[in-house]
Amino acid sequence: MTAPMLSPTDETIARAAEVLRGGGLVAIPTETVYGLACDATNPEAVARLYTAKGRPRINPLIAHVTGLDMAQAEGRFNQAASTLAASGWPGPLTLVVPLAETHSVCELARAGLGSIALRQPAHPVAARVLAGFGGPLVAPSANPSGKISPTRAEHVLADMGARVDLILDGGPCEIGVESTILSCLEETPSVLRHGAFDAAAFVALEQDEARPLAPGGLSRHYAPNATLRLNVPEPISGDAYLAFGPTDGPKGRVSLNLSETGDLIEAAANLFDMLRQLDRSYARIAVAPIPMTGLGLAINDRLARAAKRD
Ligand code: AMP
Ligand code: MG
Image 1: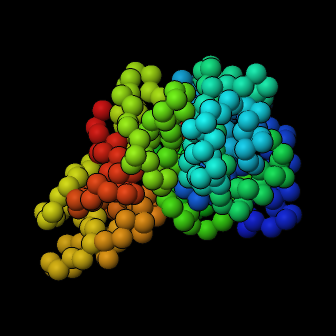
Image 2 (image 1 turned 90 degrees about the vertical axis):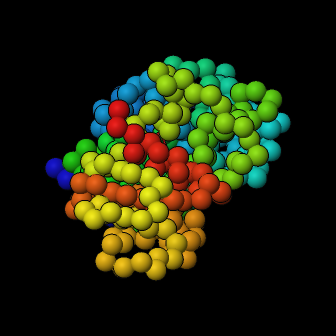
């Protein structure tokens, strides 16, 4: 049976909280991508979520919280983590901190780690669902593991409609790429995954491919069915071309443009939706070069993983 896709109202948000309390799976909009939420303290619900996504259970989940109070019951915040939470929350920033003794997030959600990833999302619907539920929710992207993340409720319906209990339709996601993940396990924070929170000041951690610290660490992720070639300045015939910035060549050869004005924020918001659109009609997609600055770091990271064949 396909899940109902509902507009967020007081009533549907209360219904979502009820479904979550019963151990169900609810797709919710966040400012980054759509998340598939369930009760982070309920191992049976979390097991259902891993199965629904086909996600390897060694890949721990992010616990979403209503704010620093709830976060500090789950994890221990050092000075750097507190400062980052103060500047980045609510927002597209996930902090990995040591587990607190008072934690309630279940072991399965943490993949057995002694640390926990925490985020306070900014999207008003996500915030209202969290407040209505009253506890931490894990909410990985609402797509089959390894595939393109959803930035619209229709993407969730198409990919996961039969595997979730309810979809809240909050319209297109404003940011469109996943949160920045910073590890605060040491005194100095380090980047585990680039995203919309500007983390250029932090050094990227070396990642172990066999047991990645962040999903972006898995070699193939965000993958379309089409083969993807990156940093292609000029399309060749037969390729779908995903352009970036002004294009003065023959318009017919540009299939879609991430941002005609070369705006990286607009490009990030369009990235997954445009990849999905091209993937439906083409076997080969060529992507224009995207600058490695600001959100370009996150866009290039997602593209590199989507292009990887193994
Ligand atoms: P997503 O799949 O976008 O929900 O991203 C969640 C990512 O956060 C996962 O890939 C995790 O690897 C990362 N993560 C969650 N918990 C931890 C943790 N305790 N330590 C390091 N990374 C974590
Ligand atoms: Mg994901």
